[in-house]
Each structure stands twice: as structure tokens, then as C-alpha cells.
Image (cartoon, rainbow, N blue to C red; front, side, top):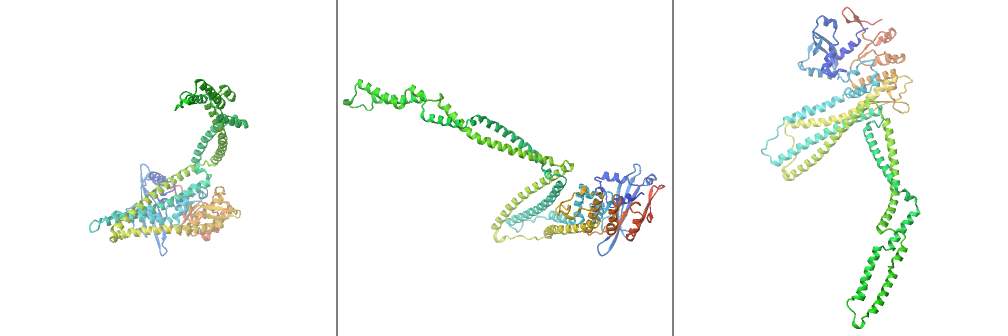
Length: 636
């Protein structure tokens, strides 16, 4: 059988072009992909264009409107390559006149409004690839990004941003500054300051909103890192730097320990070291050095001269001593001095225990005291070395636990980039707040200067009034988005759980379902409340998970969109196939198109599905025209 995949692709190529299509990134890539799809026989016969068309019935709740979307490509006959495409949209056979038909962008935006390209894979999907929603982390990230589209949250975000771009910014650019006529210069200054404050506060609100969105992206990246790697993966570079630092500090502590062991011989002396210290200190207090003795003798000789030879003032003549008498007293003086001050060098030599000078004795005593401090330092160095060794061991363990998944590096880079962006915005917020404080002080000063003449200027022009209303609307939209998300989250969780319970087998380990409100990530838990890793699910469990998710998204979106499934049961066992046919397909959507083979939907299942089937068609390949012919009916 041929043609199933062509129908699936034709739907996408009718609706979208360029990077709105899966796996297309550039315009040349798009044109090459389109050029590979025309009928070769038609090209051989000289066809210079080809087209695909899709009819859509859209309802606004009160009436149905039928649109025909047709996309045509011109072909360069010589190169057999598509050149350009043309999009045409008609309603009831007439071109729609409320969109500029000469504006391809406007026409494409209208198609996107009907079915945003980011959510189309959840309504038009290949059954053989559907399991990627459960096992492919990249596919899951794209799904999370598209959830906000499906649940209309991005509509309000775009409205908020468009109010800023197309109303506030546009009108502010057209407003002319009032000329200085009847107003005092101080009044003009006050208005300028007030305007600056409004801009600063608006920018501050924008920055705070950007920070919230960056923090949400950061949390998603961290959650993905925790899922596929260890909790230390995001800090790998920091851990490597810490390891190098600890290595250097360990070398320093090893050198300190080596120096500490130089004092070990003195430490081992124990009480002998203390006794030596005390003896040296005692000698320093009681013994005199040769220099000290010589100085003492000089002083005694000066006393001898002033008493016996040159007394001042001289004694009366009647008390003067004869020469012989002075010599007798002189000998008595020196004898007493020798006894009292132990001036005899022989006696001093017997008293001194160590043949060292005062300076050397002082250095020895200092060295002995320093040994006491070395004990404490050595103990601290040993403790520090043990602490660093344990810390190094812990870092090595964390480094070994980090994942070598190549996607980890991208996540880490993304997280680092987000952190940089958050840092820049934090810095800008601090600068703006400081500027706001300065402007508020200037405004207060102007108020004091102009007293009663100054009051807060009201917006007098229609443009300023619209700007303020637009800003207030943006603030209301922000509040609405914050309230809308939890409600949409509850609906999505309830719908997912409803369908998953229908499709799951009895032995399925999933007992509870949760959705992270920050990242929109679905978490499956067992009967112990532990998260389950979807990558280890069987093929059938993955497909049941993915189908439940797609069904929940379509229900939570509020959009009545058709479901197109190509090859839905190729890899399912009998139990899962029965769940798909009996519980999913009959309620998958208001219109469900199943592109199957005769082995997937055999005679027995075709009969069971007949009550739920409106039309049946068979695709037959005609080798004479090298094309597929569509005929009513099924294989049986």
C-alpha cells in the first residue's frame, strides 16, 4: 500500500512553510524538501507547477465557516526544483477580503491562528514515532514549549507584548513634547521627571517579568539535569576548580607539617627541655658577663677616685687623711667590693655553667619557647590536612557521579547562559531602583520649590490616555496569566489521568500522576509515591502514555481540531491494541482520520470499529501513472 505518508505530509505542507515544518530550518532546506515530493511522471511530461489543498470547517460557537487553504509551487522545468510558493485562502469559493491577499505574511498568520505550528504535531502524528513523546527528551522539551500554545497562555502573552510594541511604543514615538509657553521651567522639569519615573517603573516591571520567565526556564533546565544526570552535573566546572584549589592547599599543609617535625627532637626531650629553659633563664638573672664585670669595675674605680684622690668638695684640713692612711682604706674598699660584687674572675668562672654569651643564651631560650607554639601549629596542620583530604575525596565522588550524556553539557551551558541573563537583569534592576530613588528625590525638591502651583500632571492628550490604558491592560494580563496557568494545569492533569486509566494495563506500575506547575513536566509515580523513569517503559506503555497526553492536550485546549494518526498499532500487543481501538479512537476527537494497513485494522477489527466510522477509503497505487488512486471502501 502506498500514499498514507503522502497524505500525512500533504496536510503539513498545505498549512505551513519554511521552519514551521518539522525538521526544516532554512528556506533553501524547505525548497529542497518540496522539490523531492512532486509526481515524477508529471514532471517528465513538462508540468511547471503543483499544489496541495485542504478544506477546514471552523466554528466560533455560533456558526460554521468553511475555508479552503491551497498552496501552489512553481517548478523550474530544467532543474526540476521548486522556486516559490503561493498561498491562497478562500471562503465559500471567494477570496477572503478582510486579509490582504498580496501579503503572504498576513495569510500565513491567519493559518497559524487556526492551528499554531508548534501544536500541530500533537494532532497530526505518526503512530510509529509517537513513543518519542515518552522517551525523547528533546521531543518532551518541545512538547512543554507547545503546551502554552495549546492552552492559549501564549495568546495572552503575545497580546501583552503586542500592546507594548504596537500601542505603547508606537504612540510614545509619535507624541511631541509640549512647547514651553505658559508653564514655569520648574513645571517642565517636574513633568520630565515624572515621565522618566514612568519609563523606569515600566522597565522595572518588564525586567521582573523577564526574570520570572528566565527562572522558569532555569528550573526546567535544572529539572532536566536532575532527570538525566546527577545533581552535581551543573557544578562540574566549579567542582574541578575546587579540586585544584584543595590540591594546592594540601601541598601547603604538607610543607607546614614537614616544618613542624623539625622541632620533634626537642619535643621528645620532655622535662629535660623544660629544665634547660629554667636553668638558662636563672643564669640570665644571676650571672654577669665579662663586659658587665668590666663596667662594674670602672664605676668602682670612679667612686675610688672621687673618695680618696679627688673628693668634691674637699674635706676640712683637720680631717684630711695621710697618704699611708688612704692606702689602708683603699685596700679595705677594694676588698669589700670584691667580696660583695664577686669581682674576682676566678670565682665568676666557677659559677658559670655554660660557656655562652647573653645573646646566644637569649636565642636558645626563644627557640625553646617557639617549640611550644610548634606543637599547636603542627596539630592544626594535621587537622587541616585531614579535613582537606576528606573534602577532596567528596569532590572526586561527586565528579565521578556526573553523567557523560552529551546533552548534559548543552543543559549546563543553557543554565549558565540563563544565570548570566539573570545577573544582567539583576544589575539593571539595582541601577534602575537607584535611579528611581534619585528621580523621586528630585521630584520632591521640585514640589517644595513650586509649592501650590505644582500638582501631578494628568494625561491631557488622547495618546497619553491610551498609553496608560495599554499599560494597565498589560498589568491585568500578567495577573490573568498567573491565575490562568494553575487552572489549565488542573484540567490537563485530570484529562491525562482520565485517559491513562482507560488505556493502562492492570500490571502498569503507575499509581499517581502529577504535573510540575513551573515546568509543565508530567511526573508518573508508583504506589510508594516514587517518580518512574519513562525510558524503561515497554513500547506499549510508552504509546499509551503518549496517546493519553495528546488526548489531554486536545481536551484542555478547547480547540475542536481533527486528529490524524498514521500507522497507529504497528508495535502494540493484543491488549494495548484492544485498548486503542475500543477506548481511545472512538473518543479521540470530533473527527479522527486513521491511516492504517490491512494488517493493523484487519477484518475483525474493521467490523468492530464500523459503528464509529463515517467514511472508508482505500489508497491504490497505479503503476501506469505512478500515482495513488483514492477509492471508497476498505480492504474487505
